[in-house]
Image 1 (tube, rainbow, N blue to C red):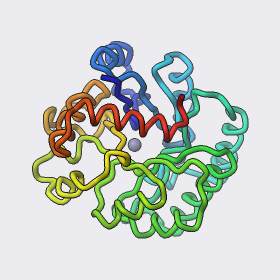
Image 2 (cartoon, rainbow, N blue to C red):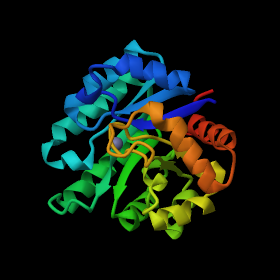
Image 3 (tube, protein in one colour):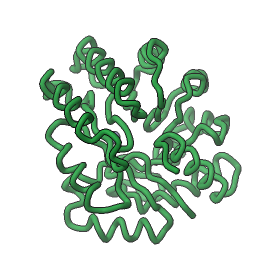
Image 4 (cartoon, protein in one colour):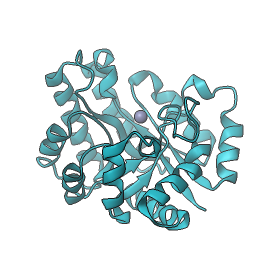
Length: 259
Ligand SMILES: [Zn+2]
């Protein structure tokens, strides 16, 4: 099996004790490439440093809406400088994690929108795909994406929307990131949407250390769990795990422009 974990936070201290061993275990289980996402100015060095040290790791950089109050306009300028400096480097695979979060009520929506669109413009300028965080705000994100022509599109990470919302993203050329959430029996709506998704639209992810799948409840999530997630989702989609692995990896390669 050849799998890509398109969304992780392996730079988090949760993994300091065993990051290398865990990547070895994931690789032995078929997870060949793992994407690390920057979420705020303070973790870009670490994300980028890890991607330099290990050729299984790829980096994305961004300003995550959950850390809204921490971000400053200077951080956006710095993001542009990083992208200028790293332009053309194959270890930089996308812009992210960024997007909108309407679930957390204390986050100012106007300021979120400003930061979201500023990063969409960077994706246009630097021809990078985007890895988007979208929580309780699909309508706002879809309306915004319709106003931009993104050269490389990207992934709606941890997609948990309706079939109608899925269809809008697919029309815009986006892939949907699926991970632990749809493995939970109580995720009824999501589990009814997933079987309707075309295989061409799915990429797999763990969101490690978060979003543990139902097979590993309450545990630290990791890329080593991706094969089990692939198996559970393949069952839901009524295809073989190999078929889902092949399709999702092909889709990830397409998003990131990997040969
Ligand atoms: Zn994330």
